Length: 143
Image 1: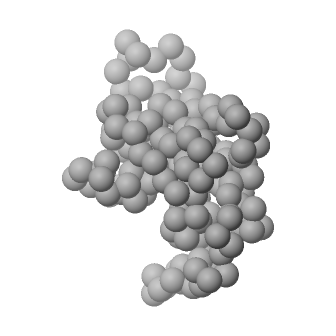
Image 2: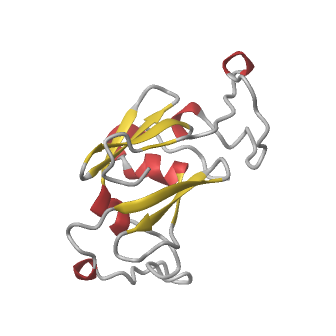
């Protein structure tokens, strides 16, 4: 379904570290050692017209303003690959920017197609959890 639909939700296929909670687990794109309950989503939905909500396996719910997520894109068009300097001018992003489509990328991220035409950014679950500082707690070690 499209962003703005009353029931916009993204189906996430998750292999839970606890085998008793996993009914079927065929995707092995990411090492289970890299996944933790704090970086593994159980659900992702549009909470309101401007908010993306992610429920994590550890029970925490993160809420993101969609424009803030667009501004946090870390793709090579938005952030210099060598220096890490921001290339995206916040003034160039419309205040009403919103996702048109959200797809999962393996078991580690989502990719968002934005209403401003941008679609190359990948948002790893670890980064999303870190972007929600209130919910993040201690950052998991990078691998």
